[in-house]
Amino acid sequence: VAVPTAFTAQGLPFGVTLAGRAFDDRALLSIANRLRALLPLPLGALELEPVASAAPAVANPAFTELLVCGAHLEGLPLNWQLVERGATLLARTQSAPCYRLHVLAGGPPMRPGMVRDEAGGQAIEVEVWSIPTSELGSFVAGIPAPLGIGKVELADGRWVSGFICESQGISSATEEITHLGGWRAWLAVR
Image (cartoon, rainbow, N blue to C red; front, side, top):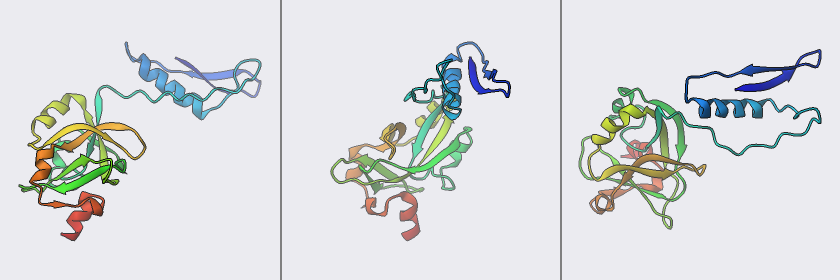
């Protein structure tokens, strides 16, 4: 994919060419689009303003974004399960303000259950990890009930795969800790 990047001192166009393996076209076009946005050059001889693209970046299918909110957070007891599978931390952020967090019965280690609640929820501190897609199945297979993986909305409006809890798990939960805003906050005060 050829991407114009600048004009030389002589007024000649200069650019870069992005090359990849077969079927990497979408990823290359995503990179080209980001370069174009960073280097806003006029379009053609008429020097028209480029139209901003709202197209999202193309995700690498070799990796899956995974949201964690409890014992898998960086530095906590189950984080090794992510690290040993080659996962890397992408962001510390918050969920959309529509989740509740409960301390689940059982353990060790203690675990939270996060459930969506449009009426009584709030933002919960979470981490988003990038895990190799080839490792995701073995990770999910080790998740005990009532936890599972489902779609969770982030504060920025994106939806990512992450830990959620079945409603029956909440019915036997020992404590609701939503007001603390996250699992680390609960660990700090318990």
